[in-house]
Length: 574
Image (cartoon, one colour):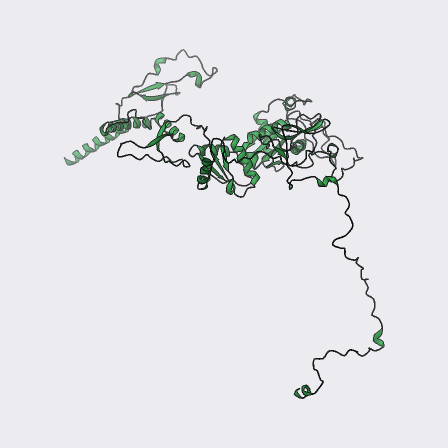
């Protein structure tokens, strides 16, 4: 290799010759064509074509929820199309159609009580295309079917064996000898009130059935009305399962369900409601409402959180918010839970602390804000913040305890306003009095003290400045009285000659037992009272207790056993 490398003009890494040798004549024939032809693709499109785009539909240029469209509105009609109009009022945005029994809304139960201040989209009717002033952007409506669809009549349902027809529930239940009647009003359709055994008969098969109407964060919506009537076509009772925000005020949900559907709630457990359609319900004569084709944009309402809420200055509100950060929440709300006891729990928490916090982590922001708005009206309270997915509330200056008026106690001037624990006042050595201010003590504790005094388990001292001897005498006197009351019998039973027993209560009063027989009419009806000529009032005499004041039967027994033991010990010694 060294010899070859030393030769002049020789390059070991030279390229191939520029004129390769020609192939043989046998190999010059063209190759056979492939069985599948090679497709011819069109030329690639230009990224920036110079042609003008076609004109877009004007309906697509309307603002939507992601835009910053805001139009201030006032109470009254904001859009009208003949007899149809869009109204802004106390119930938010509603739609009035000719011949409708009430003004239609997207949600009937979850509309805030405050009037909206602006709308997020132009006012349009969210119903079928003929009622809308803007062009229809969805699918074209289906053509009318040439096939005649029979109208189902609950009074005359199809036979059960007919093919292609589902079961239609007949009206009822009816007592023996009564038949359904055509009704127009709600009272006529409901008929006579259901009895207990009828309610049990209707509800029992629905307890384990999953055929139900789910009511979520939007509450009772407009399209649910038609859905409930669809359930009533096959069943006499419709099961409505509520979860989330509407369960904070279930009474409001039940009231709107009964008003809008015309049914009657016969059973309610937690967030589950059983809605009865009525004895004389007929699916053919049901009220038919137009269906909303989309969800209207929610209007703009006033802010729930203010820098200076009601009854507070900005500095006080900031101080409450600062102390609320270190406050422990009373509980944590689960997503899509049932919050039927939330209002009561918050009211009970306000009895011990002026500030209450609820943890809502993991929930949607609109959910816990709606919960806060409901608590503001139902408790009532003042909302301070929604920071860190937590609801911070203040009970307000006009707060009143559920346990009535309570006595006053002394608290130090530097007491913590965010805690419900009352610290004792520190005594002042110079003046002998405490630098304190009068505040209201815990109402729940006062109710427990009052109950203990009434049941003779506690004693209320009228004189506070008592010496040690006088206080000890009071304690010993109360100890004997409380023991006698605790170990005394509540009722004394006397058996007569005929084997029957008579009972009367015995109360300890003034060192003796006072008998209270009560009124005979309270225990027996007029039919149970039988006149007896042999009945003598002297049979029941006042029973005087042989036990002296301050002693008990158990003390007598102990004393007797003690004497017997002494006698036995003396006999053993002799």
